[in-house]
Image 1 (cartoon, rainbow, N blue to C red):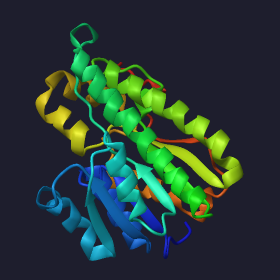
Image 2 (cartoon, rainbow, N blue to C red; image 1 turned 135 degrees about the vertical axis):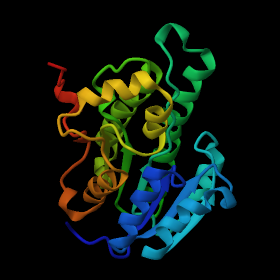
Image 3 (spheres, rainbow, N blue to C red; image 1 turned 120 degrees about the vertical axis):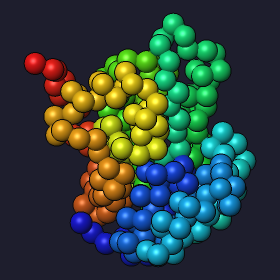
Length: 252
């Protein structure tokens, strides 16, 4: 995998398990990192500390729902070679019980938040006359219905089409847009579900052909590939790294 020496990379949702793992891996490969998250710097410190030993890392507090804040955050990153839209939420509920607020929160953060990041990053890249890459964190459930997360799944399915639409329009500007689609990750949002939702924990015991949840570090390594020269001819693609979840393994 190609080195990332000297690349400027920004990651939203950076003060979370997956975002920090991405930051650590990318720093280790030589990138200069800016983590962006809605947490205050003090709240974000435990995740920043995970990355700091491996390289150059900055932190900016910004909420992906606030377009002006995202514009300002990315403008401070120069060079901006890669922008990673990783901020996301999942709030599980049966379809009949999803509230209007839950639905809006999923779309506002998971989908519109990536639109804000993607458009702001692309405009900066074009204005600065530089090629670049935009990567969104999708999910295997953008293709496969999973019980009790209809709002989350719909937001990730929308994100896939957003990325493909951007990839088509931005190719002449030499901006590549791709999606990393993890499976069930033993970190962050999914770990909380495993710990608090018995029905979720029961399901995942049978769904993963590789026999275990994914680590945040495995997601980070796949993301690093999309940042590297190994992915120079990829755009509009989904890199599915789900441990086989989408292969529909059923209990026998």
